[in-house]
Length: 179
Image (cartoon, rainbow, N blue to C red):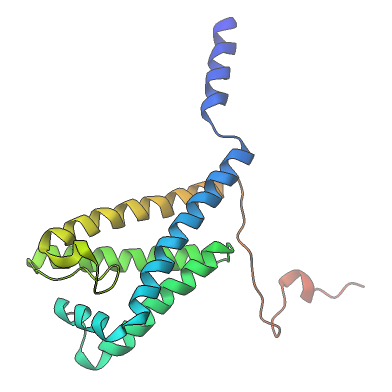
C-alpha cells in the first residue's frame, strides 16, 4: 500500500497542475507569437526583396509574386496578434503556415536549391547559404512542435480560445427564443 502511495506522489509531481500549465501555455503562446510577429514584420518592410526570395524557389508564377509577398507576411502578423490574445483560429492559421513553410523548405532541399530560406526576410544571416535551409527546416520543426504542444495543453487543461462574433451573426444559444 505504501508503494502505491509513493507512486501516486511521483505521478502527481510530474504532471503539471492546471495553474502551471496555463502559465506554460501562455509563455509558449507568446514566444511563438513573437517569432511570427518579428518574421512577418521584417518581410512586410521590404516585400520586393521577399518576392525575389519567393521567385528563387520557382513555385509561384511571376504575376503572383508580389501578392504572395504581401499576403504571406500579413497572415503571419495576423496569426501572431491573434495568438497573443488567444483568438480562436490563430493557432490553426499558424499551423497551416508552418506546414507551407516546411513543404517549401523540404522542396528546396530536395531540389538542391542554394537560395535564401526567406524566413526572416532578406537579411536573414542563416539564409545566405544552402546550409541555412536545413537549419531553417529544423527550426520550423521545433516551432511546429510548440504548436502541437499548445494544442495538447488546450485539450489537457480545457483552455478554450476566445471566440469573436461579427455583429450580424449570433451564437446558437442566442438565437433560441425563450418562451
